[in-house]
Amino acid sequence: MADIQKLLDEAQRLGSLIGSQEAVKTFREVTAQIDLDVTAKGLLSEFEQLMETLAMKEATMQPIEVAEKQKYQSLQQSMAIHPLIQKLMAAQTDYSDLMRKVQESINKGVANPTSGDTKEIGATPSKIILE
Image (cartoon, rainbow, N blue to C red; front, side, top):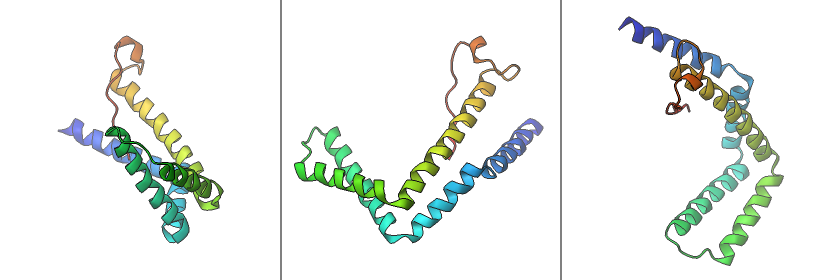
């Protein structure tokens, strides 16, 4: 039980350290700004709904209509020129890069707790999902 508590304590320390990184702070700030910007929030919501519709159509082998393709292009262009959405995309990229590096380090530690070298194990462990 003491080992589990030590693991949980270290995980909380890691979470705090991750939360203090500039990429995470920036991502949180921009996300909060998006929530207050009706136009940006609307564009993102509309884009997400369209992407779900297109994915469903693709999965069921239904044709994608010309109007849907045009709407997709229009939304992409609108989002590309919206300054706050540009900031969001950059912040998401930085956050994802940070979390990918953290995940890779965790995977190395899980694969071989003593040396961190995954080559000795011969298999890559499953990913631990971090949000």
